[in-house]
Length: 284
Image (cartoon, rainbow, N blue to C red):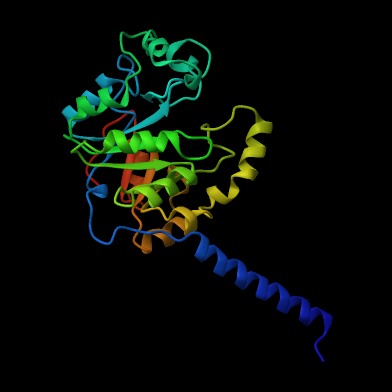
């Protein structure tokens, strides 16, 4: 007859097995079937910018093109549905004007300047024109809700673009939209430790709530619904067992944001490419 302790241990053991199996199923990836251009380049975070050249500006993109670096940039919609290249939810850090980008029209946004320069917030069309297919693009979709309008407009805007590009997002809904509607476009899942990540909230209470609500995304536990082709993960966690396993499965791994040569040397042990800022990396 099985004792209560033995029965308890069996249940715990079975539970652990189930959790392990579910983890493998939920974190599944869909790596490219053959070698791609994705890992042949390193990506300038919001273009090559510095104290005089604003991030996500046309000049930053031109600098990256001139240096032959691929470019990572962010897109979101204005109030009147124009795709703008801009990272923050709020305008204040980059323009000195408070308020959210999505609450301003294209015309209103065009009157603003980036970081006291003469550079404006670019549209996607302007960014594509500057790059002109000379280097690949990694386009981050800044969507905090359900997928739809932004993803559809982005897809349509890219239809005639002849250069190389891929999309990525923290939102699994955005990544899933491209899986279902444009599976030929490479798609990546962005993730980080949401407690420490500055992307989402300022206060400790907000960080605590969001970190717990988004824990499953942090652990890439929604991959099964979007099946990303690659993973873009915060630099300090690319040596985790999960990331190592997904890389063995063939998924390209990107590290962000790499800000110096020391971080670069560390990242290249565990990743296939980097998204960098503030320095110029060597070949991986």
